[in-house]
Image 1 (cartoon, rainbow, N blue to C red):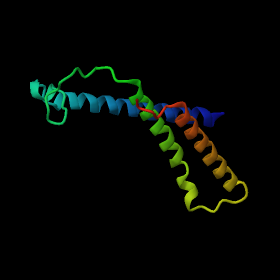
Image 2 (tube, helix red, strand yellow):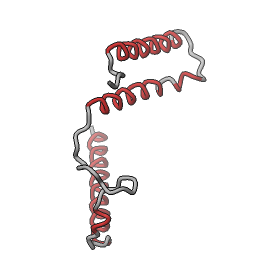
Image 3 (cartoon, rainbow, N blue to C red):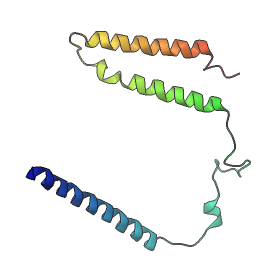
Image 4 (spheres, rainbow, N blue to C red):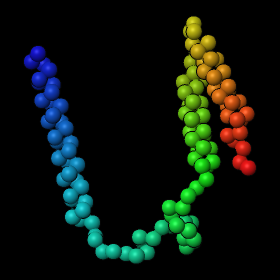
Length: 119
């Protein structure tokens, strides 16, 4: 029972020191940094060109869909890297094959549903 309160006190001290240090560093950076407004630095940068549209313009939902699908499949494939050089005892190989089958079925479904068609 005593260990619980002792650990809780240490956790509280650690959290307090962390938040205090964060506040001190934030205040120090605001105090030291120059506060002169520069119009050129406040403008958006688009590859050296002047901005030709509003930065809050609406994008087609297909951009988001393609990005989301890329992230999902990229993360799923990243889970396969630990399996590349490892010897998989027992059901490990079956688990890896099942994972690849599910990944392939998901890709085939997205392809057949037209999620990857741009037009």
